[in-house]
Amino acid sequence: MHARFTAAFSQLSAALQTALAPLLEQDEFPAFLTAAQAEAVKQASGLDDDALAFALLPLAAACSLAPVSEFFVGAVARGLSGNLYFGANMEFAGTPLQQTIHAEQCAVTHAWMRGERGLASITVNYTPCGHCRQFMNELNSGTGLTIRLPGRAPATLGDYLPDAFGPRDLNITTLLMDETRHGLSSSNQDPLTQQAVAAADQSHAPYSRSYSGVALEAEDGAVFTGRYAENAAFNPSLPPLQAALILMNLSGRDLRHIRRAVLAETQGSLLTQWPATQATLLALGCKNSEHHLL
Image 1 (tube, rainbow, N blue to C red):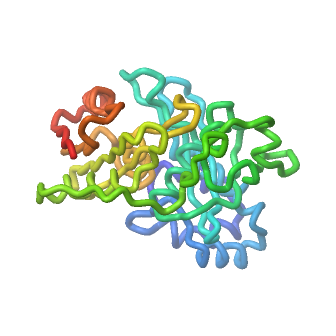
Image 2: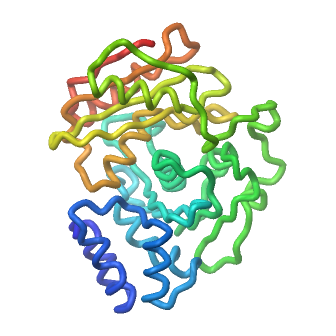
C-alpha cells in the first residue's frame, strides 16, 4: 500500500479495510475502482453507493498536494459505468495559483482520461467553489449532475449554480466527456510525441479550436497523457499538462521525477499552452520539454 493512504486507511471500518486491502495493496493502485470492484466492496462492507463514496473521501484526499494552502480536499466521481474515480486538489510551489487543480476538476478529468463518457454524481468533502461549479457545467451531464456533501441532502449542480451559463448558451453540441476526434496526426514517429498528438486529437476546445495534448515520461518509463479541457467561461479551462499531472500523481508517482515531456498543439491557433507548460515543468524540475506543432 502506498504510504500516503496509511493514515486514512487506518480510520476505516474493519469491514471496509478488509474489502479494500487487496485493491490498495496492488503494485500500482490506479486511484479508481471499476464497477465490479465497487460492487464487491459494497457487498463485503455492507455500504450502499452513497455511503461507499463518502467512506472513500479520506483516501482520495490523501492524494492531495497542497504545499501552499495545506488544505486537503478529496472528491469521488461516479461514472455512468459505475466506476469510481478519485480526485484531489493539487498545487505547485513556484508557479502562479492559476496552475492549481481543484479536487472536482481532478476527479472529473481523471474519469475523462480513463475513457468515461458521463458522470452520474460527484461526492466531495467540502462545498465546491464557484470555479468548480462552472467547470462541471461544461460536462455532458449539465446541471443535472448530482453533488453530494457530508451532512447535506443530495443536490444538483443546478442547485449550486442557478441561472447557469455554459456551452449550451453558445450552441456548443459536443460537450466535455463526449467522444470526439479532430483528425490530428503527425509524421513524427517518436512514441512520446505520438501519444501527445493522440491526446490533442481528443481535446475539448470548442471555443478557441486550439487543440492540445501533453505526454509525460516518468523516470521509470511510465507515460501519462493529458488533454486540454476548455470552458465556456474560459478561466476554469484545464490545461493539458494538468490533466497529465493528475494521472501521474494519482498513480502514486512523484511529479518531480518527470524525465521528458512533449506538448503537441495545432499551429496558428488563437491560444498556445507552451509558455505556461514549460514554466510549470521547470518549476517541477523537468528541463527536457519539447513543443510539437501540428
